Image (cartoon, rainbow over all chains, first blue to last red; front, side, top):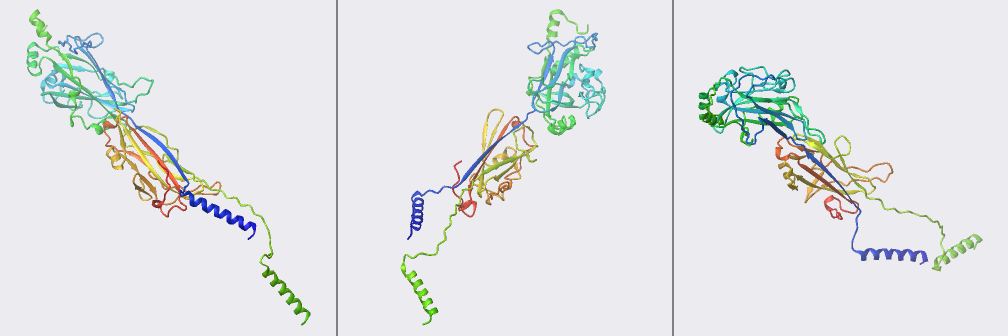
Length: 281
Length: 198
């Protein structure tokens, strides 16, 4: 056997020996990893109300108006400015439900708001707040002004029972989507939906006493705001009705609000006892 | 005896003598060849795109009813054919900080999330992994890519039924792909051994 043959044979034997002694077999392998994050957006709003002179007890003294100021507000009216701010990440459509006791509204007629002159308590909004793209009190979407006055069919309105008292609920829809919050920039807000409540000039002491038998000494107005993502919608009414349902067809969380606004307390009667106050004056 | 015969006999005797020698010489031709043997590289690449062929990036502002394109494939970027498998690590973090590990597709669906286009024919699920049923071939030719698998899934759907509880949630989908050589390693992926620990 020549040297070459011997060498090859030796190498072969060596390799076999190494493989046999080792016992573990290695395989070629590889690993790769990827991690992705999906973050959902959020729809979040804050409802702001500037009510009266911001007394801590949220109570305001409501007495009959005696006319208008130079600026057009009602004398003895109480400031009640309600607006909505978008604090979430997504563009949103918003609307508010404004609930007032039925017996204060349109003189307790079955169909509310047919004749506002029958109201014990009036509430109003700034004329500019219902311009194109802003608030609309109408039952259907329109491009133009969102208020056309009193009358059947002119309101987005329904009735609801809150703590045993019948309320007329008026719904105002903001027709422009509020932009989602952007860090470092002010949040998008609506203009005021309403700006004042006042007692009718013709209200008498006797009417007050009668109303108190139903409403108690503290009369409440509720305001609830709703919002839904504007994504996929170009119509606020459609978006909100799709998300929540048509107003009046579902339960509103009235008591999730801080007990409604207590806007009147019977301090007048107390004063009357002390001072002999005459409400008709 | 003629001379020719004598010559032949003599030649035959010589040849016989050669055969009988035992350490005889052979006609030898010598040449030297150098052969280089190189082991090929097993190179597996996890590829994720957004459905439009672009690399997938994290997504924010996802809303109910949206489907986010996310195409997951494994590519053989080397010369070694391999078996491959994928493990999904899914975690859902709610806005209040609650963290939930999601280890089954059923749990994912309970949270109104679905993997779109999940290919359970090519990717068979077993004991925490999706196993690709065919070996993925590599390429030893420069400039020519090896094979890619069919996508494991092609998107993530966030159902319209997602309620407010899921606002500002964070869904993390971790995709871990492994590959092991297929040559001399079973005839099916289920027979393959040598997977790395994960």
